[in-house]
Image (cartoon, rainbow, N blue to C red; front, side, top):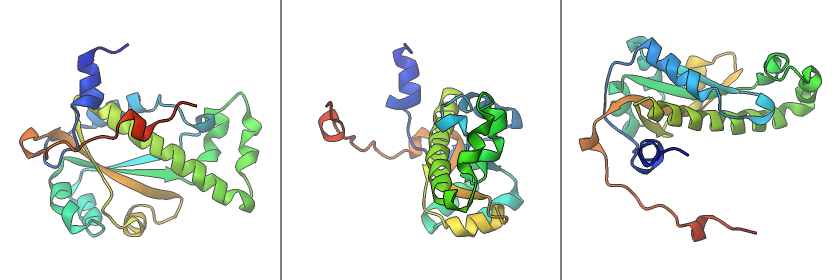
Length: 195
C-alpha cells in the first residue's frame, strides 16, 4: 500500500491548477507516458492519443478553439496535452493483444463504427486519467479542462478524422497561490452502493 504522502500527492492534496511555470522537457513528457501506458484498457486496446502542445505555433493553432475562460491560462502553460482517442485503435491489436490476433475482426466493418467509437472514447478517457495520475506522481501539476471547441481542435490537429479530441490538460509546475479553495466531494453514501 502507498504511504499517506503518496496518496496525498496523487489525490488528497492534489489540485487542479490554473497557473504554471516551466518549461517541461521532452524527457519529462516521455516519463509521463512511460508511467501512464501501464494503466489497463479493454483488451489492451490503448486507444488514447496525446498531443503535447508546446511550441508557439501549435499554441496559436489551439488558441482559436479555446473558450475565453481557458485562453490565457492555456497560452501561459508550459505544455497543454490534447487528450484524444484513435478510432482505428484496433489496427494495433495484433501487437497489443498478441495472444488473440483474431480479435481485430470484432472491430472491422461499417456496422462496428459506433461500438468502436464507444470503446475508443471510454478507454481513451481512462488513459487521460492515467496521464493526470502519472504527471502528479512525477512531480507535475495538472489543469484538466473542457471549455474548447472539439471540432476546431480536430480540424487543426487531426484533419484526417482518425483521432478525436476528448479533453485538454495543462501541465507544468503549478502556482499554489492561484489555486481556488477546494470544493466539497460527495460522500460514500451519496456516490456508492454496496449490493
